Length: 263
Ligand code: PEP
Image (cartoon, rainbow, N blue to C red):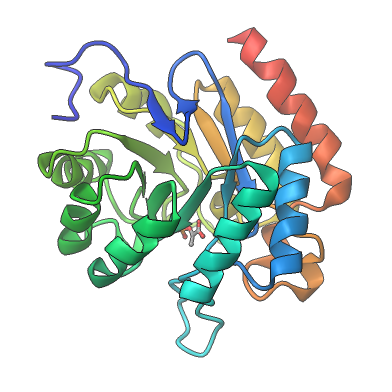
């Protein structure tokens, strides 16, 4: 269902009217985690100032440590819905449990499946039946074939509104949090008709790498990027070191403005 063999034209997925697909480079930005209404609104305004047309923000955080901030849950979803009202930006947010899909779908415009759940087949089937577009992160240990088969689980439930997201894979390298596999973008686009975007924030895990990796993503033909921004990253409850700050926004906006014309 997701293969290009029977569907040679590349697809565009619409999220609250915003297209992700060939011919555009969609900027999705916002806080890694929803912490407070003020922080989320400020981050959304930063995202919008940089040219974002979709807001990201996690209310359910799949953390490596069970002692780390796990997200605000439904209270976070309510904050996201309020900020959507205020800014007009449709909301992309992660769901980590099949039992929460209906609840998260009642607030969100797009459901995100994270790298740690990329082969949680019950969750994939549940988001496939949710009636919402889905962003499927690549499992950090998944081959491209495994990633596409995960997308197939979603599509099998009647949902072809799936966007693939390359977010870096596990390698021997320790200088970066993950290794951004730029070649995965054109490879996945050749094998599948689904749009492919890149997460330069979770790939490198470092603020200083986000803009260079964004340029790389756009240059290699990604259909969009998803980027963490935070008004006060030093106080962030999740992934502060990779969040862009106010001073980075002009350059991000410039990358987004200039690169599509070069493709
Ligand atoms: C995220 O985007 O908030 C996230 C946790 O990403 P990943 O699943 O790629 O680690």
